[in-house]
Image: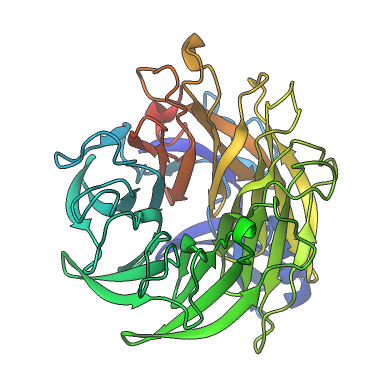
Length: 476
């Protein structure tokens, strides 16, 4: 148990995984205004008692980035000290499996949900050269143990199964973008696995009815609830356009619900599909080499669902995007779909290629830039923003080119928290032994109190990702 500075309320209690903050309000509208002031991603609802004039705000804990002072006081107004339990592991864990060999591309893709991590290894050779695999790890107390190794039932060489992965609940979605469906080279496919107790079994193989050569279906995948979003990157050199496919599951049956076309404004070099993130009603696709504000300035395209249909995409760019920024190299939507963070690893925040990340909020149907994120420690070529992942009020951002400990391109990652009105840097993460060229932070995935990062050297780590005041060992 540790003390932290948390937003004060007249009365605080816990109901399940929610915090009930009780305060006074003259009427229901005032109660709702108090909720709005906390931010949409923090306040999930209100309840007002007209007789007692008590306003109950249903929230996630809003914590300060500053520590409690001696005597249990907080240095910020409206915050007070509270005791909280660290739910994360208390030290970094490196995920390892005895089966893999070097050049398996272990860690090319990663996804974490709760206490389960899935790691893609598209270079695995179990079913032929580069047929691919994905490993499932489950938390056991303060470490992680391998639970399963997933391969396609019909796995074949050069399929690159595991190039993309996504986990949600008891299902895992794995892309195999080079799979030659029915003899169509690089048409691609995706596989769904379902966990029954501790056993993972293949539930479905997904592919579009209009599959063609070089479509590269499965280049990016995302799973949210009962909706799977699968990117078909296409191949501009062979005149195959990119597209997005949406599959819905009912019971154990998967059905194609929609196919979304790529924007007509794209050029052959836009790299549409550089990144992918979704919520219940929003899909965001990065195009990191879009030339909208200069060569490779980058953009993100947003598709929205109105309850009946998906909209034509709108283009999202930062207000200072410039040539070479690679805005959209990474993107992450909050679970509510009301906040997103976009990486731009080439932005000149503190020198060429130092990088940045941008926070956008959805307000009345429009996406509005709220804040630019960057670490004070950045230097040229650090590549901050190469990877981003957000969970509730915590974000993990990779800086794969950072010289942590003076070691060239060893890489690092940064944890930011939403502290009431803005995002602030909480801590910096890196492996204890920096390795030249490892590029730690190349890929990131965060869930609750834990964040997962991989390196280009085929290493994957799980770090405690909560506040340093709650989990002191996270600080670097």
